[in-house]
Length: 76
Image (tube, rainbow, N blue to C red; front, top):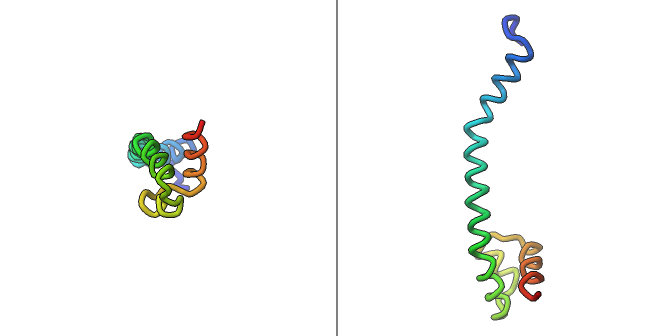
C-alpha cells in the first residue's frame, strides 16, 4: 500500500477498474440469454426429430444438462 493512499482510496480504485469490464460482461450475459431464448424452441424441435443431446451440444455449446432441462420443459 502506498503511504499516500488510504484503504478507502484503494477500494475505490479497485471498484473503478471493475466498471468497464463489468459492463461488457453484463452485456454479453444479456446477449446469451436472448440467444438461449431463441435456441430453446429449436432445441425442443431437434430433440423431437431425434437429434441427440450430444449433437445439439456440439452444435450450440449448450451443456447437455441444460438440454435435458429444456427437454423437460418442452414436454410439459
